[in-house]
Image (tube, rainbow, N blue to C red; front, top):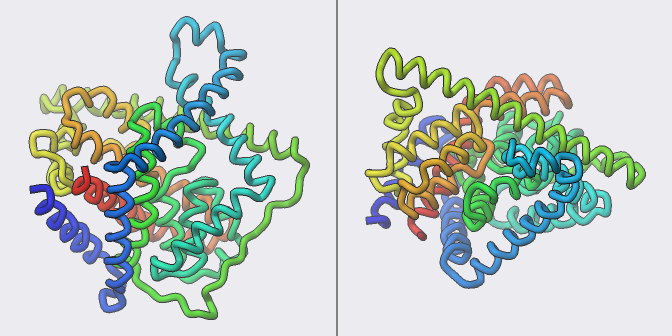
Length: 393
């Protein structure tokens, strides 16, 4: 049955992407098929082999050690509060982002990350049928962050045509920043976080090939990376510490606002219609959950979580998943976990449009114009990755 649903799922995603395709005649099917095969192989390795289990455990242990190390600083400042068991999510899940941001800053400072990003990007460009810039951007967005990635290609960004700009923005919305991966691993199984990050790289290119097909001419296939101004080591540390803290506070503020707003809307709907808003969304998204390979008896609950992620963010949805996962099958948890690991939500439209507008007003306005199409495509990326996982587990 799962193999039938896999084929059905691929067809549904293809048709949904085809609905908004800019030029159906230019779709290149060969790289799409190649990348689907690569996804299946990588997903099987990561989830069904000892080697994959070793990789997932190694990364999980790595981030667990980072979070434990971050705890030393957190306990020093908030030790009394933590010991009383108050505000554990902010202290244990969000504040460690500061230390992970420092690690990323150090790797950037010593030019280790740029080397890794270029290497992986080069490998991707050999199979994705797109340019070097698109390949670099997809990897860089998953490491340095959704908005920060545009700064590294700011000179080239201002000269890009609309189709290539869409691809860069889609990559940023379809991935997640490495600085918050550790936080995800405290809420969902690390193996699904790792799998989602890998799959989303390829799923993003697959959806782009259908939604936004184009070819990059050889003379335009160049990559111009803007190096950050040289600063002292301690200036860099200060910058990344503040960046990490800013991220933690912004996420906390968004969680407070979104969770409270969702509770208020649920109360209103429950009072007037005797059903919560999230339950309504669950019914709306349940067919899509079923297409992803989730058993029908879990489809409404899964659709609820998927919709919550779309209208709020992945953190709110992950919190909801932790509350109800004991009612769900292991298969459902695996598929929905992979779906949640991305920045595909409405707030990301503003984040990406703001980041590009800070570099080029013209390009920022362009992003705002195709913002909903961007979210639509990025959501299909998450759906496709979840479908791949559904046929493997």
